[in-house]
Image 1 (cartoon, rainbow, N blue to C red):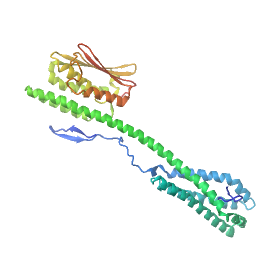
Image 2: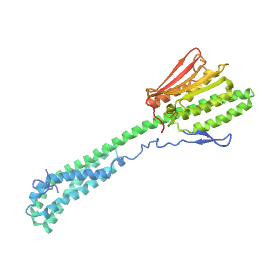
Image 3: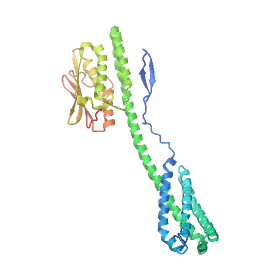
Image 4: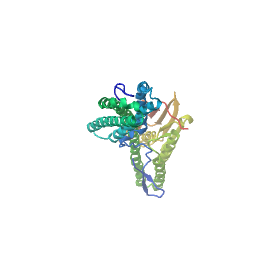
Length: 397
């Protein structure tokens, strides 16, 4: 009960997959695994009953403790029962506060101006309602229970100060609701922003990863076409089978996940098997990977464009045998992957192509590692190398 003066408690990306049947493609969508973030969630979920109850209990308990000495002094001669009756009005105030929170929660999605007007009106309405209850309750107690409350009844007849006191407390209570709601909403928005940035990065990686498929298919289908034109039908059939196997394996990989380097190198071996059908003895391959480097996690299809570039600009223009070397080592806790060929090829890499491969590698490195990772190239009279350096690598279990 909040009265005036001496009142007892007064207070002043889809993709194509090869099926098991030749010549048949099926459409498959990779699992999103929670990357798509829903931001259409109602804001009322940030106004939680549990927090409102705890805040309200804390506030009204604080008010009760402040005025507990006044209650004790007021009812010292009347006994504990009279004190308990006075103190019991706080439970009614708590119930009114919960009704106020119900309105608060229902209006969180409303326009700001309308919501402020509703909440202010709610505070005044609840304060007046609690004051009316106090007056009625005091009158009933004075008439039926404790005669010592008769003076208190006369005090509460001046209801304006009591209503003002309730308005202040309920206003603070409403402010607590707003602070709790704003804090939780801010945390939720921060999480959504982090998730949105992560989803955007994953989408970028997926787009870059899927960009490799048409690039690779374009070059491979050109090779198959060349074999058919030169009537190397058996080689064309073998190359088609290897292409089918390669696509089945590579397209099953999630483009947004890191894979062990040894898995990446196994796909490169399959790719070079395909090109080996086309170039025969003109293509020699050497792959050297440390055991520790093989467990390093890298974005899928990160190295393959460099190998494809070496084939296109090193092996294809040459009439002599060309060796492509892929080497991976750990140097000063950094993973270094080098792709080299012993024929310089065209004077400018990508002179007869679009340059998609190298650009793709640079963009994927930047998307995953920022400026920390690097791609460097070096050209000599009879060699060309491309080196990827990734700091602070993760390792597969």
